Amino acid sequence: MIIILYGEDTFRLRQKLIEVIEEYQAKHKTGLNLMRFKENNFDFDKVRERIESISMFNEKKLITLENALDDKSFSEEFLKYIKKNKLKDNPEVIVVFYQESKSVNLPFIRQASMFEEFKPLLGNDLINWLKKQASKNKVNINPEVLRKLVAYVGNDLWQLNNELNKLGSYRAGQVVDEQDIDLLIKSKIDADIFKTLDALAKRDKKTAFRLLHEHLEQGESEIYLFSMFIYQIRVLLKLKDLIEKGTSFYDLPKLSGLHPFVVKKSSEQLNNFKLEQLKNIYKFLLKIELGLKKGRLDGSAALDLLVAEI
Image (tube, rainbow, N blue to C red; front, side):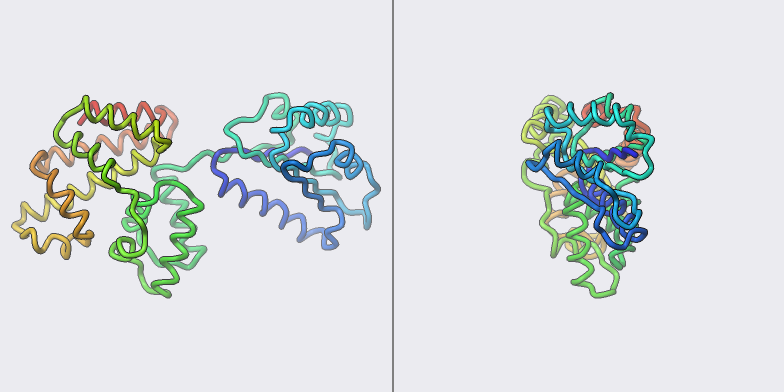
């Protein structure tokens, strides 16, 4: 049997590999037929010997190969071996390819008994994953606070998981609120991000496009930038609504639950928007989010649409 696990989301990819190994170990207690090969440790003859060796205690074999497809010589030789020995149809030998890459060569996919891709999460999929992870880690936190955490951190699941554990330890069973995130999580809302948002607020599309693509050139993901826009529009909506209800600037941090720094920076943008405009932009953001989720838009196109619309 050939199983291929691949994708850019290495957190869930690693979790899936661990899950496969743990399920195997639960059924085969000796562990003598579990073999793991990692980067820079691929020797075709050694792997072949393990596959062909007599299995002790009549157990199935589980062999994991981590990023083996990066080794062109090994992967080409092993593909021939898979085809020749019909490993795809052999239930006594389970070979798991773990591949931290965006794609896998079609010849290997065709030989797989099953395969699963782990794409980076975004939008509601990311929030839903965070909800489950918070429950698993026994962290009491509501969806709005989770969205703020995403706005601060981005969609790096390794960091998000670490930050959840940090917040859970700090609160020790109590509900995590927005101020805890302001206190404990280093925000990625840096000066450059605010410059981009300022340009958007002022309808300076030329500058916004330039700054946006500078972010992308610096390695920031479209998904992270998109989450920043969503977060900031929510902030502006909350503050604009309070101001129109007669709330003083002094009381905004307390009543909004936002960090004073965020309130100060955001208040500079409020004069550029009416409440109804912010509501329309937010609806447009939800529309883009749905397009991303269903695969009708890619990240870069979604960001360009956002700038064009605002």
